[in-house]
Image (cartoon, rainbow, N blue to C red):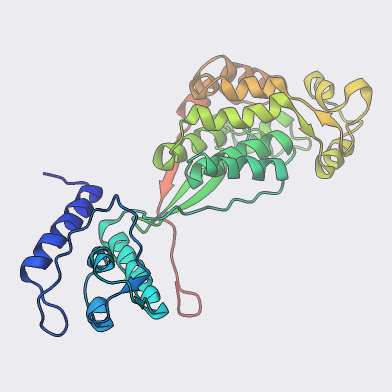
Length: 337
């Protein structure tokens, strides 16, 4: 029969009062006090009787100290509690809490996480995920998808990546590899040409499937919830950063698709830093779901665009894409892991 850590703690606290009164002795060999106490009352524990040595109080369980103080209050109120007794009780309590955390494997305190990115909007989004009870991987996924929205020139769902996650509870580390694969029919001869067609530079996008697999292993919040937060950034809009504006200006004059031009060159002029940009189309893609992206209408749209630009990506390539999970290579640096 499995007993939860909370039940164990409650049972241990209850039995300690009874077992201690029946069999334990104080440091000087005298029998213990009756530690019965109504915890619903507001006891004044600012005084202790003179006849109870501090050594005896420090030698017993912290749980029993609290109850003994309740009874001792009713007997005498003459001697104030020395300050170092308060510190002793606090130190013993903290020590027991740490021991219980180690042996029961339960978090007795709330651990706050930290997330950073190169865009304040995405950093705030990831931190909000942590505050809402999401795991560190949930926060990372939300921030990565957000960066694909606000910094599409360096990241996005059309690419891939690598994630390394260390599980502190199991002391295990995994590397989740979701880099883009080349199409199955791509050959070296296709790449050894004077002018490489743009479509041939497109591999199978692994970002969404890789992040989804990371969420499957380590996520806490629903996948749809995490993705919707990044999609909201695209739909509600954001201010164009300096780096995005610079990247847009560099491709001015090149042959660009109509969709790209409509988004980043409204009215024929490139967006400037500080401009406000909405991307509702990208929001719809994010919210369409993983199956739609790799096996549905979206996958067909991706393949069609690649083919128009001279690529050989197929729907089979999209469907067959898989994520690789491996153990990281470990070694010594200056004699330490």
